[in-house]
Image (cartoon, rainbow, N blue to C red; front, side, top):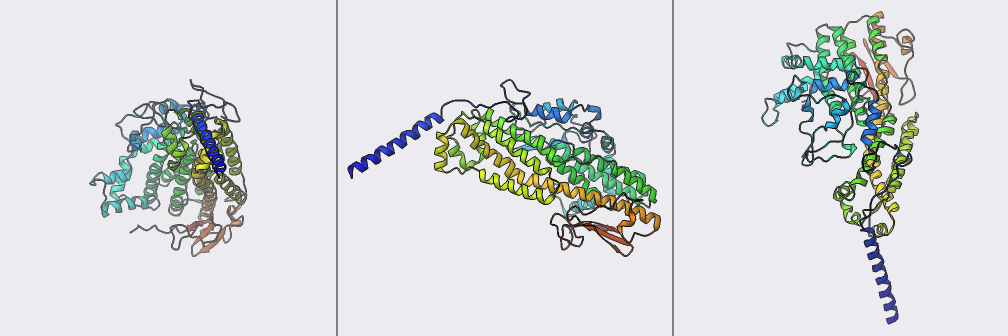
Length: 541
């Protein structure tokens, strides 16, 4: 018995000493290491003074290309909106400012504090509210404004809205000019703080893209006013500017900018444009000229290219950021990875080989990009689901035994573990929603544009024949080159005459025929529909 106890004490002591040696080994000062190569850092320059890849410069050099300030729509958008887009932007306790580096990349000075800048209707209404608390009358004003973005209205019926549009004439003229620019470049630069620190690239501000949400609403609102007053040509230029702005915003590097652009065009394409077609009294040739304007718009950039450039660079920049800050700001790293694991992660050394993490990040982004480029929707969804499942399986389980193992292994294995955590955060936690939504939004936008072109062809046919065709095939080739099919089902669109009008639609992401019902119908559906005559929108109670 004594012999057995002695052996047990020796074993326990040996394990304790082994762990102690491991802890001492793990906690030694050390340093982070990485290799600059296409397989790890993806780009090999430029490098900063400490030898880290400067992904902000690498990305913006690619995004800006040879675009000059006078060709850049974003420059005019800033002149129209001014610096107030940055107000009330807060991260933690530190108020953000657009870094000076942003304006250096843009090639222009920041806009002055005071100017004749665009004013959102909500801000105009709230200007008389106490503590921004809106009474029922003010809430009704805002609802009436949004109704006016996709329904004809008279200035005498909505004097407050008309006054607001008059107030914004100058900034809207700048926006119209911006929509006619050949390019749009919005620098992706992480915010800086008053203490001189800078965040990782993933927290770059997208203020000008977000500002376009309100600008497009104003243009659509003015177009509906002009439709009601018979100013058809001016109304179409406002609506066309909405489409052009959306396509320009989509050229931004961030996948979120593409999602904003899709949202912008969707808000106009199947609403305001349909009302324009119904109430403008254009001839068949005039409608076909408008259709030609739409067909000449540049295509939306594919989601895959956003993932391959900005999202990849953003993920690698995060790894470089943590490699740099690991010894200086470990508490930040730990809180980002996962607060409840911080006790175990503090056992990690300051010496980490980041090559496995960099290599794995590129490998996974290669696969995600290849998936996004798949044309077959079913195959793409299946592959994306498989990627999410495999990524989830990589998530390290930080229990006691795992922590002990990580203490004893070398810098390379630790780098792989930490990298998997970051990949799990960026590709799984964020990508599961943003990337999937972007791919679904890309499909919905494509179908919406198909439907919109078909609606213009139907309107031109009606202008020439005083009726709509019995079948869609009668439109080709005079009014439209070919009849589009339903992207979601691969079948012909559902088309039916209804009285003096029509209903046609494609099934949505769910693949179910909901009878042409959309999310705001009762009961709700998922179909992308165009209906003539256009149903009058109702104010929400």
